[in-house]
Image (tube, helix red, strand yellow):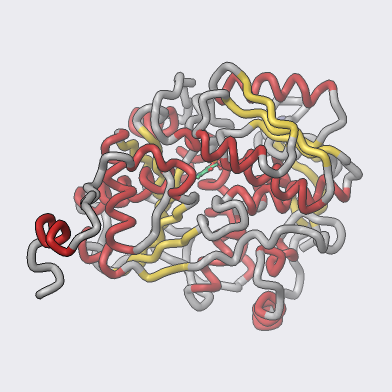
Length: 411
Ligand SMILES: *Cc1c(COP(=O)(O)O)cnc(C)c1O
Ligand SMILES: [Zn+2]
């Protein structure tokens, strides 16, 4: 299915496959359109995918590149899908799986979108890659640019977690910390993008960038033996991941690669930045911008570009969009860690807490197969788990040990 154009999501005006993201007629977002498939041999296509590399490039037939993917890229994607029986039991869910996207090269799902945007930027001849980031995107852009030998500029809010700043600067990028929140950073970058010939992965390259998220859906379908789960729970920042995961399933259903319907889509936000959950709750598509105040910094986008589409999707699939408090996020991180061995960052705490909320509310039927998408690594937001458990500090003697943990060894 070769990509043929950029098409306006609203008025359907067609544009060349350039570094362009907004419709000149109606200011709607542009999306990559592909040639309509003819004579699809589903068996052959499945075989070709299975013979591909253990990275998202096994799905290159569904990605917006003109030629072959570059060879010097970090291998994004093909992350584990793990059955989570103990968490399922704790929450009273019949069948639960965790898609662990922390297992990417820079430990978040952002490696997918950057791999695709950067590959397309190279095809278009860009020498410099840039981004406006809430944290994980900064890590991914800096690392993938280093791997590809390109220059990079990374713009972040100055109050970002230290782990994320350190894990970005180490790659030798030009790191610009802006005194302001993500929405301020994004506004500045839109201005910079207008002045410099740079590929801003989530601004002028956004149509290509967001296509990378579809690969989460392809992987889940393939890892479930070419089938579609009943429900997906995934976090929402700009709404790109959430909407594109559904698009991935939709494409494969249309092609006959898998049977069934697009899963029920449940979105997860933090109460401290929940413009999409609020719009869903109020029964409108209009996401009123908010000023973020939450520990889930990677989801702290107050003015989400794909918010209205996320609301529409949740409604259309019988799902919903919920918000959880910072305390619920911390509890979510702990719950996932204690029942699955997966330590996620705050965004994963948001997803797990919303999953728990859905289960507690009785929204999930016992017969359902549910997949929760965990998008980032706990070591990047260490501060939030400080003080949530006890450490036994002792002198190096057996008596001291027995005094704090009596009978532990004898038993
Ligand atoms: C960026 C990000 C998301 C979601 O981002 P969208 O803008 O909605 O695509 C989710 N989780 C983590 C950890 C992220 O870094
Ligand atoms: Zn338009």
